Image (cartoon, rainbow, N blue to C red; front, side, top):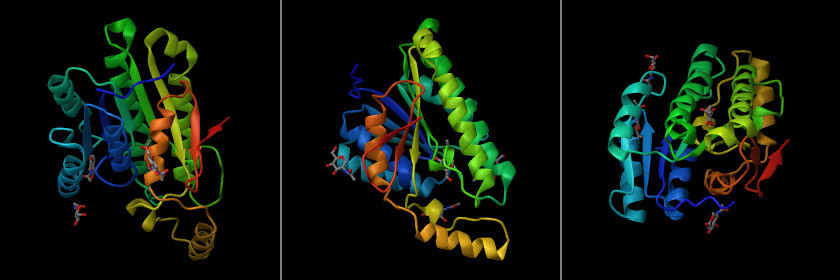
Length: 250
Ligand SMILES: *[C@@H]1O[C@H](CO)[C@@H](O)[C@H](O)[C@H]1NC(C)=O
Ligand SMILES: *[C@@H]1O[C@H](CO)[C@@H](O)[C@H](O)[C@H]1NC(C)=O
Ligand SMILES: *[C@@H]1O[C@H](CO)[C@@H](O)[C@H](O)[C@H]1NC(C)=O
Ligand SMILES: CC(=O)N[C@H]1CO[C@H](CO)[C@@H](O)[C@@H]1O
């Protein structure tokens, strides 16, 4: 089955910069009707809309200020009122700060689950929707284990389990809502320029050395990969590392 992006309304959390921005750009390239960019930073949101408008034309990108941990009800209501129907949700907002476990879990797990369920209900065919797609940003940390970021690791395992279960064939066949995960390897964004591990000095040094040895990529190929993954089977997860072609994570 070919999934058509043309005329689809896409909502992207954390969409103003980095991977989220690239995803908005690539879906607009493929003919999406509008990209609704949610982000906490209004300056970056306005900049993203300005750049995307120059590239794709007026009213293709819209910014709404949003804190994913607190604003789900208010922002989703505004989105549904304004656009009537949302076809694609990308849960991308996240932090990388292993010194604040509660915050990481709140943003990277709880918010992903709550946003997914809200839009899943909106899209499900068996409850009056037209079906749709939810793309969750997991990470290489969703399946490969290292010793440096245990909290982040836990949050990504959670996103993978949630995605595979909600996206299970059983649920997809009933609802027509596809749920897939994208697992980027190390990607150059603002988030990764200052990763925080524990205050343990030796670990900081070892982590720095470890980071230097990874296959880094820019955010751009992750945007491309998300367009490809849009067509994949519900419940599946895909690795994009070092800018190489995507690979299924079993
Ligand atoms: C928002 O982004 C701008 C531009 O990158 C930055 O200068 C500013 O500090 C950010 N604001 C907050 C509250 O993080
Ligand atoms: C988002 O909301 C939470 C909960 O109220 C708060 O702790 C956090 O600081 C907010 N984030 C920003 C960037 O304002
Ligand atoms: C992304 O895809 C576009 C075509 O859709 C292509 O021109 C570009 O080279 C790709 N970029 C990467 C980094 O793969
Ligand atoms: C699903 C989700 O919100 N994932 C984010 C968690 O945080 C990382 C940053 O460390 C983001 O890259 C993910 O998109």
